[in-house]
Length: 219
Image (cartoon, rainbow, N blue to C red):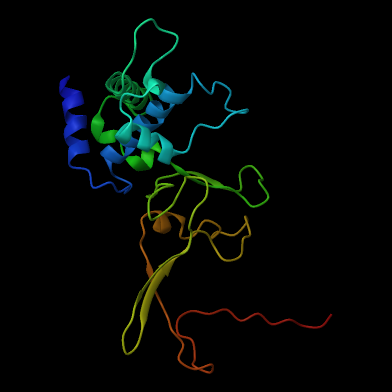
């Protein structure tokens, strides 16, 4: 292994299998797994529009329970490739992928940069969404953020004699692109900076804080 590959291996060894925004091993593993799946299945399912790869659960089972499976062999070569061959080739491919996209500095290989999150406008109108947001989560993690869809409302509740709660959502309330607050809370949402939520104990309890009153007059 090169010095850089040793750094990657050490990071993967200490990885907790989570996907925070600043995680290098999360970024590397995601690309490595994608390249490994392609190495195993792309020759057998060459047209992604006509065929889907077997589910990830099947690939994991193949690796764990059938390490000598014929599926690891590359039919286009005279040699018989093994799981180790495929894993090493995909490791190198992942290293090259991240180097090309994010540079040679491994500290720049963060999960938030490698897999950005995008908020697309409901009407799919260009310019009214928000791209390249660095946010945590993965499609197969507890916080199932795929980068294109996933849970948006974040809330934590502390139960007790009087419950307390904190929450955050991305975007302003009006949905008006002309509003200065159209993208309000997006960056705080990405950083999981929750705001305290107020529990009204009665229907007539007065609200505190700034408020706006709109008066409609008959024409």
